[in-house]
Length: 336
Image 1 (cartoon, rainbow, N blue to C red):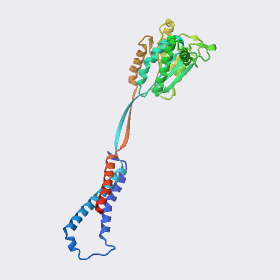
Image 2: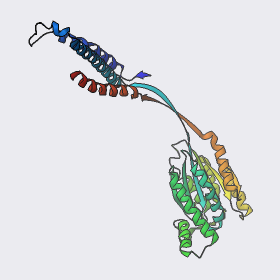
Image 3: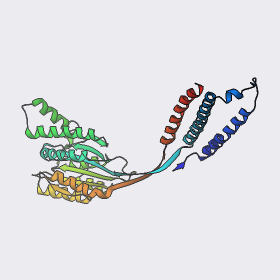
Image 4: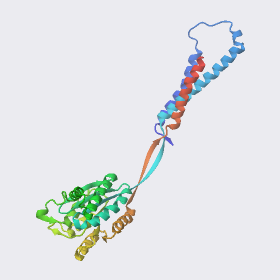
């Protein structure tokens, strides 16, 4: 333990020591009033002596409490403190879920968002974002650590993919709403450029990470697609993978069940270029990719050790409060 204001403690102690001497000297000086003669009889009276003894004892106790109160006040002003080290652990990691919103990927996306909900619930400090694409890319969730917001969006996506996958036309209003949720914005420019622009979707997601050149963070994209190009992209998948590598963004790819062999090979080679891994769709592929990310991220833990100066006012405050209360009580006793 140490004092933040030691000089104030020294000054306070000097004041506490000097004050009693000043008061005692002043008390011994007779300034006014009339002295009473022949008080010997009264002073020898047992009742008088008992009262005077009680008065002197209470007075001494009052003085002691006054000194204690002043000492407690001085100590509070001097601020007793201790140095406390706080160790915190956080993940220096950003994760983006980037999903091909074309209908042929609905089954894969449904499995993926269902698995990701448990993962998002267990995140501690990481930032998570969600992007979907077809012709154009749409950010549903920018990178955030508001996990309730992320989970709410995952629930909406799960409901939309489930509705479209089951082709539940009985609830036609819900079907249209689910379709609109995935197509609004993602089909912008489809008449001119076509659809399923895989490279554009990945490249757009890469540049959705903030401060790519400024912050040293681990950046990961979970990328789901059938890699079935049906238009003219601005950026090819290979070019997008190169951009990812140059920006130190790791891509984990998941392909659909029925994708063409050449599309599978192309997607696999692209994600391996970034230092990521490729997975074929299965009931466990979503969980496998999450486990792989978690395994790799063990080395991404950042320890923050911070030192704080923490005040310890509890004991002197309790002493001050108690002595002040006792002063009020004893003062009445002395007067009575």
